[in-house]
Image 1 (cartoon, rainbow, N blue to C red):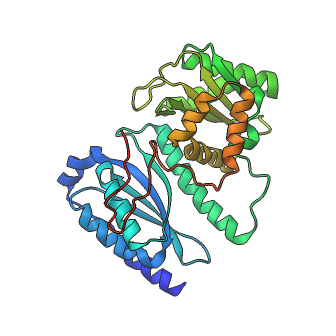
Image 2 (spheres, rainbow, N blue to C red):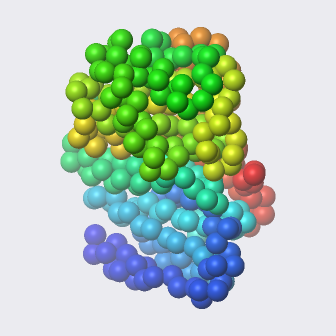
Amino acid sequence: MTKTSAILRAIFGVHRVRADAVRRHAAGRSVMMRVTLDAQHVTPLRRALTRDCAGQPWTIRIATLPHTDRVQLSLYLPKDAVNGAIAQVTRIAPAAQFGHLFEIPETPTDGWRDLLRATSWTHAANALRAARQPASDDVESLDRLLNPGNVLLDASIADRAALFARLGELCETRYGVRADEVVAGLDAREALGSTGLGQGVAVPHTQIAGLRNAVVVYVRPAVPFDFDAPDAKAVSDVIALLVPEGANTTHLNLLADVAQRFCDQHFRERLRACGSPSEVCRLFGSDAEGDGTLTPSLTPMQRPTGSNGASGARLGA
């Protein structure tokens, strides 16, 4: 690992741009892309991006993968720099693996910040866990926790208050937790900032004292309603996460699971086509049985083809 450590020391310098350039281009810094590649390729990639993104704010974060010479990069880029970055990765590191690509709203809500923190934390934790011991079959995930009784389709819900009241009633009936405690927990989290993500998705979440196990509820309202989402779109898909008080690891794992699924346009389209609670649960289960790599964008993206990367991917608005 000596070579890897030396490479990482060389690339951990702070990328600086002039303050006026940062302000001028701040609105364009809206995409986070994850790439896994050999550590030896990080320095040439960083140099290429420094040249290509000159005068624009961008960030590169590196996470080592234990007992390997590979690293995972989190690239925060202006939206119009994504195609060029993908082409550079393909040119410099042909064996690189593209992970998730998140289109971050220009004014992200705290819900988005929760997801970004969760995906970053969970990746690091899973990398360490995989290096030390086999993954446990008891890891709580959306597909394991969601059941038909917790899927509400075409629900008559007029607004956020009515949604929280319905979630409280469900938890009191099925899990013995007082409805007012559920509502209070969701309201308290929402007071910190909207958990609306945009694209019609909201992920209200909280920790509840007295709850014995994590609860996942999917709600599709009959009529979409406002949720203070960053793109101002009404919410048509709600994935609510309720976890026992202090269950921080479970909480973060579930938020990361939400990010990986609901930031995939194809998954959202398939979910909205489900006509029954059992179909919804089957979709979550079949999605989890894949190779773990979802379509990495809010709109379909394909890896560039050709040696010069001319036919790059497109990230739709």
